Length: 167
Image (cartoon, rainbow, N blue to C red; front, side, top):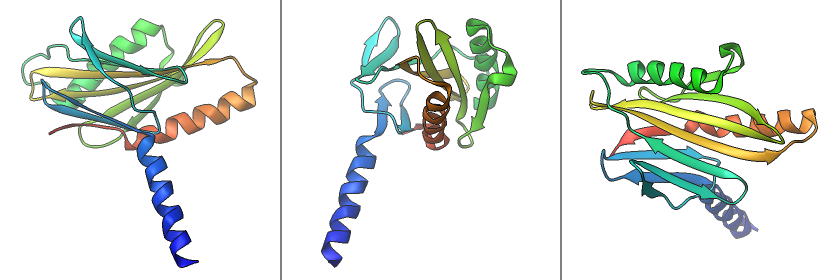
C-alpha cells in the first residue's frame, strides 16, 4: 500500500512536469518557464521565436531593444502599454501579476469571433539592453459563460509560477 502511494506521487509529478513549458533562448540567454501549458517545439522565425501545441496553444517571444538602462519593471510597463493599445483593451479588464522580481504577467480574455482567446503576456527586461515579451495564447470555441469563467480561472492560475530568468 505504501509503494502505491509513492507510485501515484511519482506519476502525478510526471504529469505536472509534462504540463510545464520551458524554453532556453540561445541569445539572450534566457529561460522561459510557464506552468500549466503544454511543451512546444520553438523555432526562430523573422527575429522572434514561435511555437504551437495541440489544444489551440501558441507562444511567441520578442526581444525589442530597450532604452539604455531600462529595468525589467520599466520594460514591463512600456510593453504593457503597447499590448493594451494593440488589442484596444480597457485596462480594468486586464489582470496583472508580478510573478517574481523580474517577471510581470498580464492576463485577459479576447474575443475574436467566433472564438475566444485566453491571452497571457510575460514581460521583463534583460541586462538593461532588451525588453522581453512572451505572448501565450489559447484559442477555444465559444462556450457558456460559466464554463468560460472556470476555464479562465484555471488558465490564470498557472501564470503565478511563470518566470523569465537568465541561465
